[in-house]
Image (cartoon, rainbow, N blue to C red; front, side, top):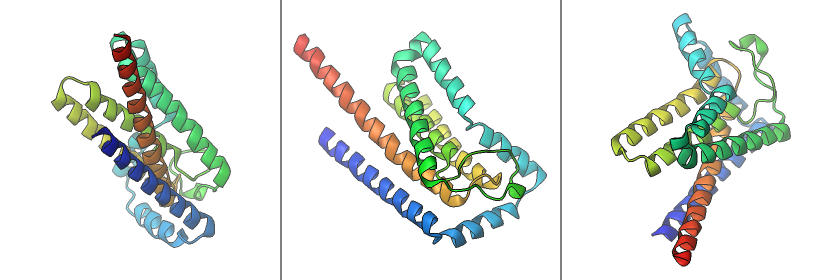
Length: 216
């Protein structure tokens, strides 16, 4: 059963990496420029004062500082540290290092500054907010489903985290700091990283259990 599960993980990682490579090639060659422009200008035309307040709030909920604060809370609360805190911190740091490396490799400029609703620096592809939130909040949902004894609460919180991940990605286009392909690239790379980390955690936990059985 576990081998089948790990094979599924492998397929998901392969597809996600393939999507990321396809988007990256499309971005670098300019093939997806038309798609980016069609989507983002349609979004810009939908802007309103109330929507802007909402999307700014959403986009800032994915800021690095929020993720760091969440990690600190999980590490400081003793009852959460071992099951959630340490793993969350490892994942968040790994995700940040990967997307920063990818940004440096591709060095894609952000959309025109005149179209932005918030200040943002650095390169555009892939979207760090989209990737980091998918990986960080995604692993938190995974850990909740795995360890939380209240199954209904775990499922409810996981659905909420999934919704936040999607909204944060969409918000990056609305506030004008990313192209749609940046978000798609961030999500696809994030899925690959998230599933790879889930695989690593389960392998590690399995080995620990085997060692405990052998010692016992």
